[in-house]
Length: 149
Image (cartoon, rainbow, N blue to C red):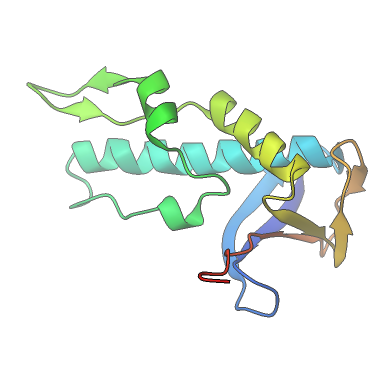
């Protein structure tokens, strides 16, 4: 039986949480590392689907999804991925692969680049096993650095 987990993003404690995904997970028990992997794979799949739809003319322009990324694919990741395909003369797909971003996200978690709150409790160990229940949620809390402080 697949478990469904609501994934939220929050920029600072107490700020409005935004529903990012409703992830269908292959199992009810997984490590925090696996949950991060599922989150990144969902972000990448959403980006790639929007990119394909944009180039197929199904949507006018790709929305800027960079604010919703757990870790933002920067120029290094884009350069490593390169253009992933061509649709007609001079039109490139800007598809991204998940593996480089998963590595960046795991490293960011290890250095407190973001926090994971699973069912109201902070997860601090990537190897901690989490059990997804009927009403489980996870919030990825990304703190915004203070300016001038």
